[in-house]
Image 1: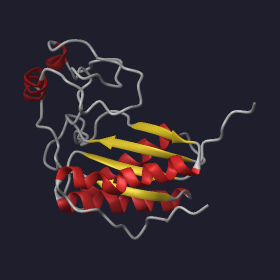
Image 2 (image 1 turned 120 degrees about the vertical axis):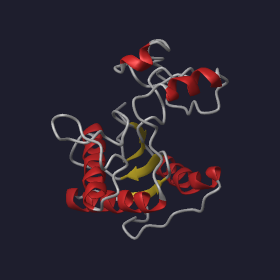
Image 3 (image 1 turned 120 degrees about the horizontal axis):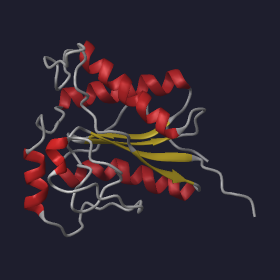
Length: 201
């Protein structure tokens, strides 16, 4: 039996501080690179692709770790979210793949992406880079006036990104519905972007 072909990707890109590598609920990280977080334990690497957001955990431990970060966790404003989404759209158009759903929330973004020529993790990094550049150019970067010694700004994003493969049309439609409905969980409205391409099969 031949391997199933990936026909789309459900991608989650998180802002700095949204989900720490040693979150007591588990994380997709292998290491804790920041020394100020290391005292809260090693990375809590898991292999599941299911959401861990509702898992029972020590909330106080999680919040204490967030307070220990060098900078405050990033929360994008509405204007920043608009800048980010538009940058995603331009990046996808330039690279020749479709975005079938997109939602940019204060602390993370969800996208459903069509097939592409580059590996998905590379694509995620390119999306993040495009959004960061757009934020800087619009004078909306969360750390607009913060610089390292080398002149670069701290990233507004967490390392890497999470993705789930879609193998069937129903997988794609389910992911699209999830992304479209995600703002409702935070008391926000669904988002509609002109660059989103309806999924048809």
